[in-house]
Length: 353
Image (tube, rainbow, N blue to C red; front, side, top):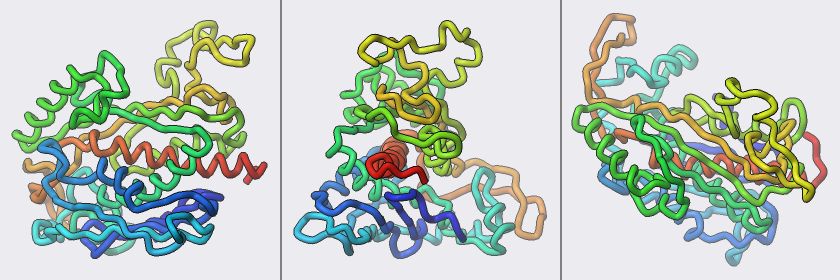
């Protein structure tokens, strides 16, 4: 299986499965001299951790991170950094009956057809559990970006069709759905609980922005900054779409309205471009929105087939998020951080890779 490596100068490889002994990552290209501690990584992992509220999976993982290499006296040495997060609360027996069935909405069928085998214990490599390694790697990228004045933030702006009407970033970490609208957060939580009670799930939309970017990140043609962000975010299993700036509403606008007027000081009067022009950062905030599908694992009978192609009915047991949106917020931030750290290193080096 290929496709486990990401990045050009700031490179990451992840490994591990949902019900294996551990997951982790190896980072290559992290500059020497960056202060890095387990606590800094754990702060990000805690935001993604399962079991953090009544709205998410009941699986209880502490997600304690171990730094195996690349750090000495609390500072990066320039060598590869290996991070490990051990699984401690697997319940593989919950999936025994699924070994010969394909779960609708999952990668069971495609993995089986492509590789001739699959890890049916919770989805194996295709499980959302895999993203714990991405968040650990993203925590390192965030520290690097913070040194150069770049910060990233995201929040749930829609869940189950309930949209945020106000946008206060300081509200995001104050409610379990990570919504910037405290009033709508209550309605979103109620919708998640109602779906769970029916054995069903709901999706939503996450908004993300990065501020403090210099002009010039990204390369023209195939390595555009927004293209790299799109690939990174779309690599998450539950993501079904992404839009930058005005996004799909641009299709219904006139050019005279959509174009961002430029001011004498080099700033823009608006940001419908989402902080990117020609694939290169403009210096304005990088802004995009991500569509998240309803969690595929639901406790309702679904039509499927077995490994021999015979019709079957499946009810997915186990512990699953009735809505993945609140926990994917830090994952989207992490993938954004990995892209921007890589782009910043290329920009600093004058690389055009």
